[in-house]
Image 1 (spheres, helix red, strand yellow):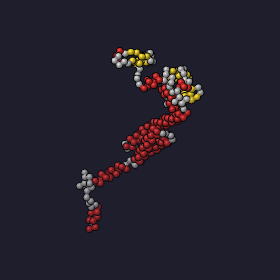
Image 2: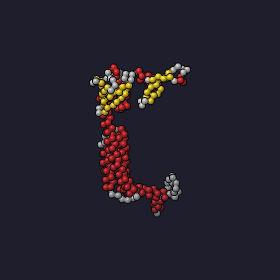
Image 3: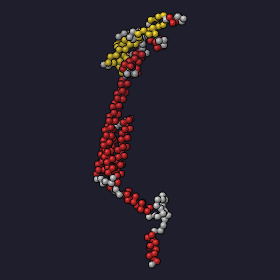
Image 4: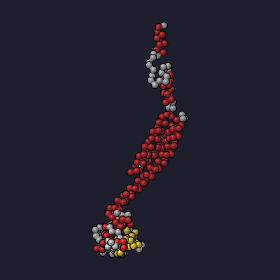
Length: 266
């Protein structure tokens, strides 16, 4: 830190505090709690931190605590402070203990270990994520097969709709292939998003199976619906005063009955 006189502050009788930034830049020292705290912790020292095969160099004030060091290491390792264990000279250090009181000096070496509970939790999360990924992939493979079968169902729907007679085995084979995909979906263990994907695919397969059942019934009796339509049309045509009306005409005596009455008079 260097103090110098600024003419602009003659009336105030103040001196400006300067500090040297990395790279040799001299700037006015910030007058805040952070800067004051850093200054009170002594000069900066370099600490070599070993974390598995990785080596990290960190710079902290000499009178910092091990808790302060963990905060710096968060940006280096990605480990939260509560996930870190710092060992110096073979002993684990508490967060409140100061570096200089423990004998840490410039170029000292500290060992960083990850907390076992944290490591186990991460392994579980990784395993769960891997299982979800596998489940999603399995559902995606079934979806691709169902997409192919959907084209087959669409072709059958067009044929039946056009009145073309389709062999019954075509419906049976298509239904069987869809049921196989349904069994595959039933065997997929899934959670979270993968579970929702599986559920949606199950519904899609069931919908295609229902469509095939309907098409099969129409194909077996193609004139069933047509016959009903003709019957209804013929019935309305017999009513002279009911054509084009939405309500049925009033009942009249059957012509056959009248003829029978005339026959009894004979």
